Length: 354
Ligand code: UDP
Ligand code: MG
Image (cartoon, rainbow, N blue to C red; front, side, top):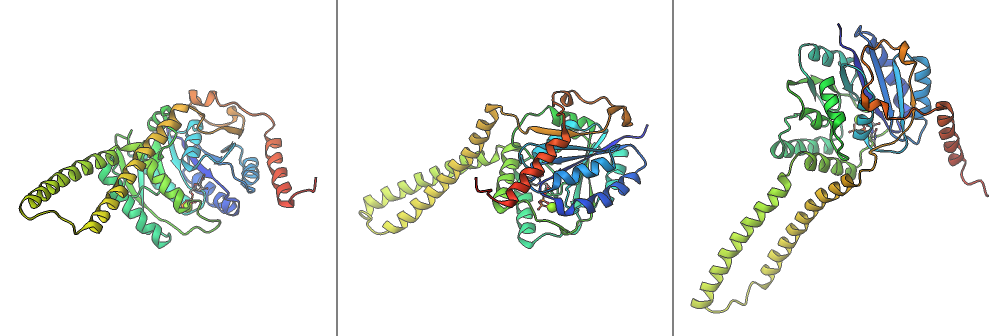
């Protein structure tokens, strides 16, 4: 039997580019010649994205499912929400901005058919601004050194995961994570292929420098304790060095006399060490903060609406996974979006003078 495919697409304020995504995505998927579903996860967009997704759902209810998250939970949480709802044997993630061509999905599916359970991708010629490429290369290098995750291009989100991996991911309850790395950690036969990459045609990147740094911390803290060990090692090295320094000073004091110069050198060294200490404290804080978020056990995201066709009309053999059952189906989906639309219109009009 041919394996079925689920495509999971996180959407955050992408109204400008969604129509051109639909125009290329659906033909590319039809060409696969196997049952598929596209799960759009609206990550609390504040523009018309939800309404555009509803229109698409009405056009293709047989193959489209739309989840609306209540608030912006972040790209990776949105993908996890989609995973929890996916039913395909192969689950493929794709960005909504057409930077990864949907036409490449066929290649990933072919690699999965050949027995891979995780298909990673490398952007052949990456079209992003210069500093992002440099920063990415640096982060890829650091991550490779500190974690066991062997991914060449961690930023490329067009990836395929086998059902077994998605089920394993669905059992994870971590609040800050990095989906490609998490998937990789469960993979038995991971492969990598090259895919094309394009510039963003509509809308803007949703990642500021700050969000990118946070994301990299998620990756680092989620998959390694090497940063903590680094500070332990650095502490030991510094302690040894200063012991040596103290001995030299003591000998100098006995044979040459007290030292009075070099006060500012001492300041320099002291400030440097204070800096190192603060960074170390910050790194510990990054872990502790995440532990704190984790122990509170708040829901990672909340689903405010779900649009999907009649289950029976979908040609799916797989029963929906247990995770799917506890997400409540919200009635009156139309009114949900209409309400959002109304709020948006009100906001656009400005204060009403009440
Ligand atoms: N995205 C999301 N929630 C966010 C940020 C981004 O769902 O908080 C989605 C976004 O709509 C897009 C994908 O994640 O489909 C990748 O975002 P973007 O293209 O801005 O990232 P970049 O390509 O700049 O790394
Ligand atoms: Mg992008």
